[in-house]
Length: 364
Image (cartoon, rainbow, N blue to C red):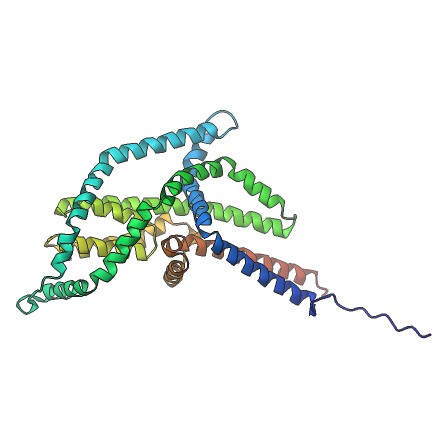
């Protein structure tokens, strides 16, 4: 009996070779990961906000931790949280009450202000600038119900929803644990990665993300404070109604790239125009000048090099994030894009190092 010669076949899986099977399973894993993220999106958003809030407090916690005796972080965390509570109480007592008064006054006048949009204006007897304002007013009168009603319903839903209370309570608690045990959690995760080039790559990604998020959160808060203070000062000088409230609104809109500042500018001009303020042109010039200062002077000074993204990429990320996850997606678009950029650069660096090693080891 003649035996057939033994042949060595490549390992296959479901009719695919090992390399193709690896690509298939990688694609399936990515799809499962995207589906899981979509299903737990709200929970994941709370944890991400808590992590960003922890990075906001981290410089002060680290400063105190290096100067207080003992190895525990609890004393520095307690001091930082007590200081934060004191600052919030002081701001709420001094400025928050005035903002609340202006917010209540504006809310009570909204029906009156919106009714002015429906009043006809004889634009033929007016100048060019007033004709432009009149045309904008007429367009707002035609569409304000389509815009205002959904926005009002969304705001009432957010304010009245019980999850907003849970969000406010959970974020500081989760941030506390991130600050207390973040390094240990990161070390435990990195221990699951085998030693070698992969471990070095993950270490570099973690270090880059650590610096990126710390500088990004610090920059966002400083940019928001700069906008709020400058707006409040200018509005107080020109005597704009509800100026402190509008300045506070501008602070929160600074956290949404590109769309946020534009939205706050529209709100400011709309409230000023409906309130009968007669210097809208000066407000528009001021907002444009400050935006140039903010985008081309303050932001490059405060933002880290990891967040230097092309404006087209930022706009695409903001719009795509808005379609995927609404306002939270828009707010998180820049750190997500910057994170992807860091991961891509590290993968490219690893590929170049591997290519260089293979070239050096090849026989000449």
